[in-house]
Image (tube, rainbow, N blue to C red):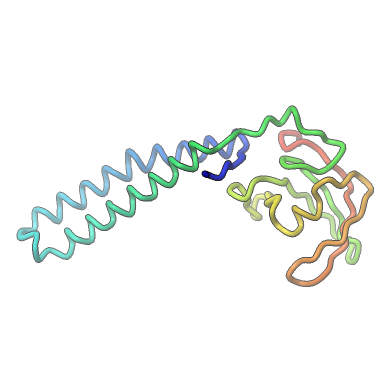
Length: 161
């Protein structure tokens, strides 16, 4: 059974664009490499041709994997998310109780997680520890560095600023 993955509209569009680029530009580039290698003579002793054919196989495998992911992708309906507690697509402002540092994270699916943009996975230790919490609640979360205590300061929708 294939794994269903949940995405934001933005995340799914990013996947669609990546797949489209791989099918068009990527395939064209590899076909060019194969043609160039073929022009160099005897194919039985042509390492460039073999490498280009291997690259083509890997590229087609990546396309097939991405198509499988897309076929099992679902868009999360942001309007149905309850903002009274932390859930997927919640934008959560939390405070580290030990050092007072405040950070804001958006909880997303594992596939869309990107710490640089403040998106953490609901499957990460912090994501799991925050799920279901309400504003004002505190939670102790076991992270690689040890136990940390966070207070939920604010919960808003991902699309809200």
